[in-house]
Image (cartoon, rainbow, N blue to C red):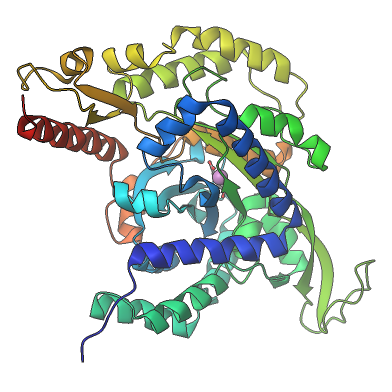
Length: 475
Ligand code: OOG
Ligand code: NI
């Protein structure tokens, strides 16, 4: 009997919708933010016909209302390797290596996402996935206790593991299997109020680093935020307080510009949530808190983990453009380092704009100076010209149009800022810069894909297609 498989793109779209519904129920402020983003996006599109037309050309207009990224933090190599297989069922592969130890966060990360332009247009759901690096924790006894707890937990349901294996063996899932897979996979990302550890151990883990407690003390890698994409992040940031949401002090990433580049992000602070800790053996559970009675054998406490975030995406930069961005950002931060309490936010933003004046801010300059990636399409004008001429000349001759390719990835300095704002200033420790991509890939069980290669290939493929189409059209 032949099997008919549900396309991975469709499984991913359904999973992203299910995750969004779950997070809306878990974190009501997320729902408020999504509604605000939808309003602002509708206004941005109504007020800028050129923007609407460009997004329609690049296939982004249809995807934007459902576009989300999320983030999880894993505890072991085995969890990471299985997570790779789980995401593969939905056509999501690991892109990029991010070392956050430089920023005082003991993790390294990748982003699981679709890479094919058609798959991105269908649903671009991505998950920023971090792996805890216990080796960066100084206290050896604590490290061992954490490793023991992590070794015992099972973050995937048995049915989820069986369906991953089925998808691998059969090359896909049937409609019924895909439905069950979405339900089972979602369980891994759910918030669990019952901790895995006693309050005493929680506090030791928390003291080593808040992030260590967030990973080790719980049964699974709860989704810690889900991020809708906005077309006007400054407008959403300004309107968040009206909706009862307090945004973080500064927007991470480049300043506001005419041509958005890379990624700008802002978030609202993590919620304090009730948690039930295991009672130490032989000790009666502690008293109650205003939340009420803890489950039998457990004691009450609180944990801050989950937050909300929005993002605005812009032009993907070439290595040359990225180097310029990195240099200007470093220069800005050398002059003013943004404080988490927001007290120097205005000064930081003024410096950011001043320093970034050196970054060209029109599409032609960005393209002609090789700072960004572009997608080429024929304009429909007859090509009275030699089609082997450089792309820039074909654009100048009016036979090709160049549209910016959107950045689909993340930024390590911004990610560190998002982590920090949710871990609190006190958590700002320093570790030695300690990238270990080889170790990460060994734990993952696969190499991570180079993001520049993806954009360069997308640009080159569009150009080849455009030239071929021009060559066939009547001269
Ligand atoms: C991930 C933070 C990074 C982003 O958008 O840069 C991130 C985390 O807090 O686990 O999601
Ligand atoms: Ni994020």
